[in-house]
Structures are given as structure tokens and as C-alpha cells.
Length: 327
Image 1 (tube, rainbow, N blue to C red):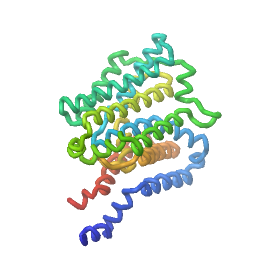
Image 2: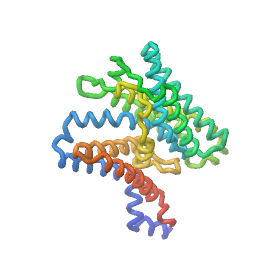
Image 3: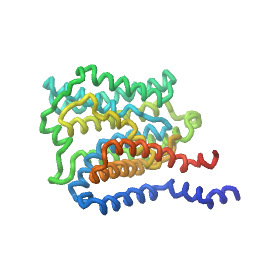
Image 4: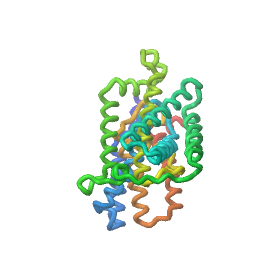
């Protein structure tokens, strides 16, 4: 008991306690907003704030789905590749003259099927979730190039243009509204449903959850299907914003969502964390890169900082979990 109190009262223990809550991430977010607001007179304009929201919608939706995977103690690094593939199928269906209202549900189904494949590889082939989704990342990206020969498929549609770039009341991006709805649904599911309770239980201790009667295999399938479903939504918005299905869409951004989820307070071990924290993590990353763009920071340095942010996120997770104390 005394040792616990000593740890809690130590400087490292105080840092660990501070980092566990949303206060630390909110502090970082508002600190960056204030800093960039001072450094750039254009940063806090309504136009730029809505631009951040529009940019954050893709990564935010995908990170919300990824939260379910990571709460289970897993991971999904294939999301952006899947978003690109969904965009390619969306473009090909549009080019074939298919009804636009039919294209969206079919694209979402492709995402769900990809999630089932990921879960099957993990559960049936007993491959590590990191390796399984990394392998699928390359497989899916390869198919993006194969099905079109590397060519872009252009989409000229008022409906898809509104999904990607449309504004409600001339100000509020429609894609941002979609992101808010996704977060509300996942927040409610995690907090108030049996699915959410079972997901936290499986992430906390998979074997104990299985002994308690929870179907851990079904939970794995559900988590990956949600992650891939959100990736498909992100792919629809990303393709709509670009007005073209691109083979390399989202390439190089595969770790962004993982960094956002970890920054938001969810541990790599799973079982702990909130989707609201994920949202804050997404906003931190988007505000950071938007601010650097406003300050004309070279894109090469932004890539360096992206790696630093990922390393920082994992380091913060180590502080939260107390791994540094055990070392």
C-alpha cells in the first residue's frame, strides 16, 4: 500500500495520472490552437476552422472505427488502403453507369467484407493482427493498381461532390456532420450496449472474457467489420473530395489513425480508452498539420514530424501504462 502511494506521489506517477485523463490531450489541443492563432492571423478564421473539420472528417471517421479494434487489443493498418480500394470500386461503378444511390451501399458492403477477411485471417489462420492487417494493406493496395492499371477514374457527380465538399447553410461541411454522427453512434454503442461492455471485457483479458461466456471470435469479427466499415465511409468521402478515384489515395497515411487513437488515451494493450479521446487525438494531429501548412513549413519537415508524433504517442502510452516504472 505504501509503495503504491509512493509511486502515485512521485513525479513520474503524477505525470502518469495526468496523462490518463482527457485533460492532458485537451490541454495540448487548446495550447496548439492558441499558438497557431498567435503565429498566423488566418488560423482562427471560420473558413480555416471549417477546413480543418473537413480534413479531419476522413481520418476521424476511420479512427473511430479503429478504436473498436484497438479496444480489443488489436490493430488495423489496412484502413487507408481499403479506403483507396473502396474509392476505386466506387469510381468504376460510377463509370459503368450504376445508380449513385446504389453505389454507396455496395461500397460499404465491400468494406464490411474486407473486415471479415481480416478477422478470418486472425482467428482461423492464427496470424498476429498486426501482421495480418499489414499483409492485407499491401494486398489491397496492389488491387487498387491492378483493377485500373494505375489510371485515375474521374467522378463528375453533384451528389458525390456534395458528400465530399458540400456545405450545410453555406458554412458547415457535410462530411463533418457525417463524422459527428459516426462518433455519436460508436460512443453510444461502447457506453450503453452489451457490445461495448463485451468489447472492453475482451480487451481487458481475452481468456477471462471467453471463460465468462463471451464469444470472443464474434467480437473480433464485429470489431474488424466496424473498422473496415468506417474505412469505407472514409474512402467515399476522400474520393468525393478528390472528384476522382486514385490508386494511391491515402498512401503514406496508414499510421495516422493509430497515432490519433493512442494520443487520445487508448492503450496498445486494449481494454481501456474512450472514443471521445480518439476524437481529441484526431483534432490534435489535424490542427498541428494545418497550422504548419499555414506557417509554410516544408512538406518534408511535416513528414519528419509525423514520425515524431507517432513515436511520441507510443511513449505517452508507455507513461500511461507504467511500463517505464517496470523497466
